[in-house]
Structure formats: structure tokens, C-alpha cells
Image 1 (cartoon, rainbow, N blue to C red):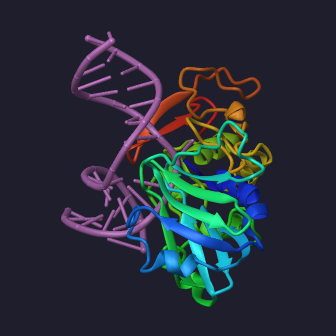
Image 2: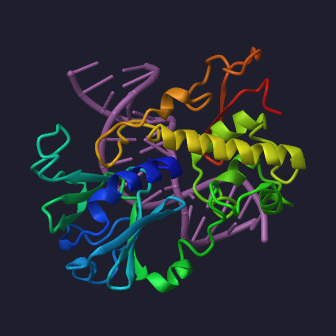
Length: 283
DNA sequence: ACCAGCTCCTGCTTGC
DNA sequence: TGCAAGCAGGAGCTGG
């Protein structure tokens, strides 16, 4: 489901009910998701206070007062649902757990935070906070696309020598961390770059344009509360609405929205995944 | 080092 | 209406 803007949206919704609060009880309803949960996860969460909730790429990071950090990756279909006294009357609050509710954090103030993940591609792990960057899933991540480390020179260096299509290269989290299929398609359209172009054969000016396009599309999506496809919603139950701003994603056959362009959006498959682009104005 | 293909799992949509 | 195929926002692993 979630790419960087959706994860950031979840983080913003979750921070008020997690940061500074204590986990009174952790209910772990299966042995793991994509990977087994760490040993004694429930015990290591119980009684711990969450000091801060941050994000790295598509990972949520809850720093605990035990010196460990809870890492959460939502995979394709993961959701974090907040239920408590103040949300109990809302339509999305559910008294009975669904069969895909895998972990429930019962907060001391009565709020429940439920990790629901139908496809079970999600990840939860615990890792020492002072060595967090050594975690296997964080260690090789590229720069944050909205941070200072992401600029034309850095992206050009990361793409240099690569003959793979730029579309698939941008999905590689070592190049830039946090993009997924939707926002790569949208950023390439904004930059006017053809998704099949060899990653290492993009001129410096166009790499700079791509950096600007990536930043802009992510910022706009965050401002919109992310994109709602199928069933994504923010932790507070609000629906994102950036999907209405898609230029190309899931729009095969529709006219290219670029002013003056008479192209028609095409769908191709790259690396087994759908790519949407305008064959006329992306070169 | 790079890269294409496969894999995990469930559920929704599409087409016959 | 039923059923099977196809598709889905991720990313690690394998083998070339």
C-alpha cells in the first residue's frame, strides 16, 4: 500500500496517540508477518513508554524508553488503526478483531493501536536505538528524498553506470529511499523522462529536473494526506485524496494532462510491475 | 556490481 | 451467479 507520503501521513496521525504514552499491554496474535517477530516482542513492548515516532523512508520508528526502537513497515497492505474512547463511536472502530489484526498495542490511556495487514508483507522488529542505522533493512537505504542529502549530484552518482531503466532504478531503495510504483511514475512524467530510458544516460540538467519532480510530487502528496487506493486510510480514518491529482498512474488510455500535449497515457510492464507514462512527452 | 525473475500472502476486479 | 485469471502501493533472494 504505502509509499513515503502514506507512511508520513500515518506517522502524523499516530504521533499524538503514541508519543509520550505508555504501552500497557502488547497483544501479539501471530508469530510474525513477512519475517518472524523478534523474541519476546510482547514482553519487550509491555510497560514501555514511546519517546518519539519518526520515519525513515517507508519505515515508522517508535523509540522506546528501554533503549530499543520498534520498527514498522506496512508492506503492501498494512494499516495502523487507532481506536479509543474518543474514536469508539466512529464508523471505523470495530469491537471484534478481524482475522488480519496481527498486533494490538493497548495504551495506558485506553487507546488501542492495531496493526492490520491482509497480505502479511509487513514487518515489525525491535532494534537498539543507538545502533539503529545498522538494522539490515535500514543500513543500505539511500538518501531521504525530502532531506538535504538528496540533490542532483547525489542522484546522478547513484544512477551512473546503470543500464537498467530509470523506472526500475528509482524503485531501488538504495538509490533514493521511499519511492514506490505510484510516485516514480508521477515523478518521471513531471520531469518528462521516459521510463525505459537507461538510468545512467540522463543528462545532468534532466537529473536535476527529476530531483525537483520527486520532491514536488512527494510534498504535494503529503499535503493531500497521501493517496487512497483500495482501502488505504490514515491512522485517524481520514482518506487521502492525492489520487485525484494523478497525471498518469492508473490512467491508461486517458489523455495526457500536460498543457499542449495530445498524448494518450500508456501502460507497460517493467520488472513485472505496471508503468504508466505518456509516450509523447516523456523522452 | 548489476539485473531480471521469482517469491511471500490475501482480496478485489475483470472477463467468460 | 459462479469461477478462474489477473492484478495490487514492497522488497529480499537467487542465479546469470
